[in-house]
Length: 418
Image (cartoon, rainbow, N blue to C red; front, side, top):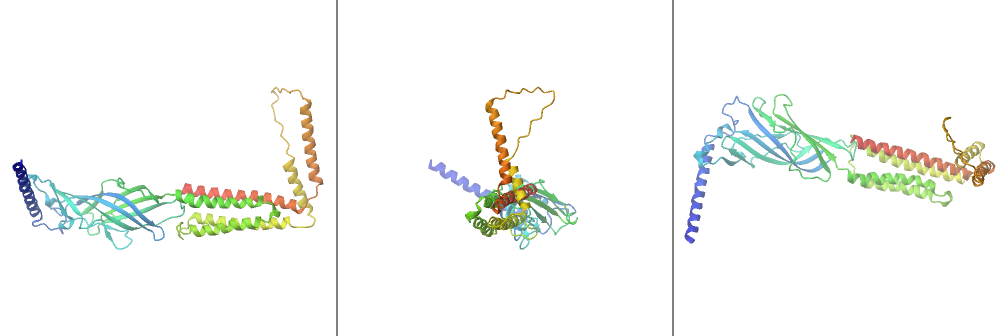
């Protein structure tokens, strides 16, 4: 048993030396007389086709102020090295081998929108695999800081588009072309981001000047808005709605002005908190800033109307005839509403139920109540307190209508356009 084990070990060691010898011989055979400064073709009038498949791995960060986005990309590049084809039979059926990219020619593709220094798609430290037919497969990548113009007009329902341009300025289109494998970005390895969602990524291959190998990636991202809806939109809308309730408080309670000023100060404090959350951009300005400014002005107007209402309630003296008629008309309208008769066609047969004494008494009571209401509204003395009550009702309904109309239209516009 021990002898068999020793023989197996000896065979494995001899086989490893044989494989190592084959690889060393293969490397010497491939690199002997090889010039990595030249294009990978035997006839330099032939165009080199470099196939590219971009993989978006992660969205690391997006700084809207600096207009910079950090993305992790992997690129699968493939081309044919005509000077490195081999016969596997001559090298113990080895069909492929791995070399550092620095040992052979590889495409030095540059990222045009780099935020700092110009970055290459890959580095010479990354290894590549060469197959026996000369096909070279190189999987490389990096974390790229990319300049991306930001449009926060419809924050927090905004969508951003970043252009990522890959260029190879050393050669012309007659010498080399960058050909995408697919027209869309591969997201099979994409990690989920808590703030941004991937929408689509389109790939276009053409020369931006008609002469240089060029590949453009249009990356579309959408902001995840759930946090901003719960943290910003719903609270400020509720704060604005609370403003209207000040007119429901009794005028003699002395709490109207305090509630109004408290809501106003709540807006100011909340705006300070939101300044760290909303992107601070002047070109363009987010529409939600205009909505927040409207809420602040709306709170000021409510406080102003509250002061006017208190002044009217505390006023002494006689009321003008015009205001008295207005209050009387409002009283008649509110307490003397009559039911409209139901119209019927002439051909319809209407069954008239017999009128009982109880129904007759109810009708007489309603008529007497209606006449009493009209008589009371005409004979009762109109005071400034009555005028103040009417002012409170009109102010509350008008301001409430303005608030909800502006709020709904603004939020619908943000959602639809975003």
